[in-house]
Amino acid sequence: MLELAHGRRRQPSPAPAAAGLLMAGLGLAIAAGDWRADGAPASAGSDPARIAHTIAGDALPGSYPARVVRVLDGDTFEAVVRVWFGQDVTTRVRIRNVDAPELKSQCAAEARLAQSAREALADVLASGPVTLHDLGLDKYGGRIVASVSVAASPQSPENVAAMLVAGGYARAYDGRKRQSWCALRG
Image (cartoon, rainbow, N blue to C red; front, side, top):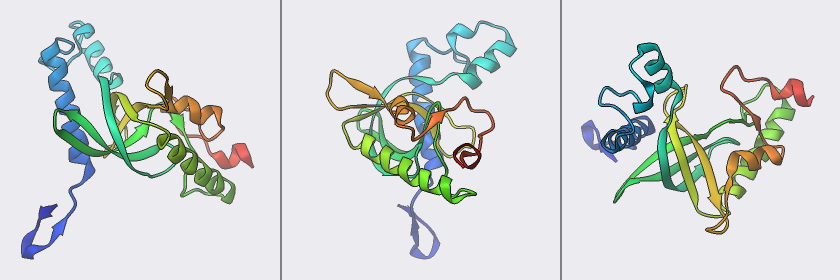
């Protein structure tokens, strides 16, 4: 809790937490030699255009254990992420490469699909330990985008995005303009 004037308190915003998580990972990547001190990935070379493209398109490597706090919709959830020994950050996580129907939709059919997608994601995330991989900044800010896996058993982690697509709760998404679920599903 943050103390405000007149003794009031408020929860901290998740946006600074996400930025802190990403900066911690970037610092570790620089120390490990994966990124240069100027912020560019070591593999980007010296061409400024290639550096800018690589930074914008790359994610922070590594795996981060997460504890799900709540599921927001069919492709986004809030989690406590372990970023370092004894260092946990609460942030919103958008699952990479999928698009699920929106709860605040323009048609009743999409709203029904969105509720089913949210329930499916909650079930999948509750099925075992959750791990985030290749964290990056989401294009809308205030949250991160990550590949997400869940392990029903330690030997068999499952890709959450693939599970949602296979179950018909989401579709593959490349980050461009989102298509309406209303038009596709009637």
